[in-house]
Length: 228
Image 1 (spheres, rainbow, N blue to C red):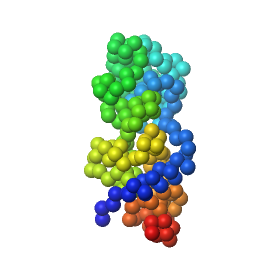
Image 2: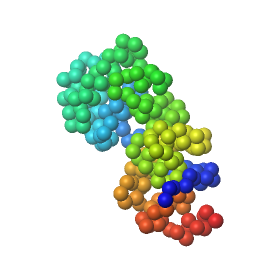
Image 3: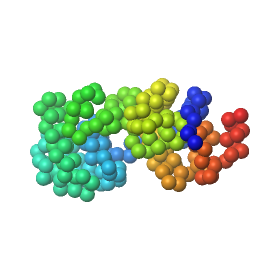
Image 4: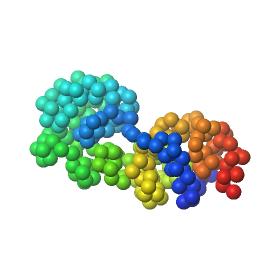
């Protein structure tokens, strides 16, 4: 049975609850500058934030600017990131990106999607993360967690990442849009997990439209009361 789209009232309550639960949500990647964030997100493709942090915690004290990483070279960089999946191709892309940043942007990070996506290894999701987290732009980076949460709850039903992204940007109230990316990732990572979602502990179970949530502990009496 397809999941129904949430109503405007449900969406408002959904994000009010997530905001109350995590008033100041942040990425779990370690960074202290837009450049460090860009490299960390680029390295995080098909890898955990924990594994990326372990690598960058050693890399950034040695090299945390485009020029400094460029000076390491591909082989030098690999020594720091070899514990991360796909490190060979990632090292190549990071060095190419750093060269472009040095030659075209004086080592700074561009603040437009078009310029970011032109960097080697930087796709739409990475660009959205940087634009949102580093520069406070109302973008939505849809990863596996957000794609799952959007479709499962009825917040943003879509067949692909772009459909879910477009829907989220359209339906999320402006007051929540800047932090929504982090709230949804964290909710998907720790509560609305793939195989055994923790519906019995979920702060938004009563406004979720997933029909199977009661099988995973959601309180049906509360849901009926709040939606009546």
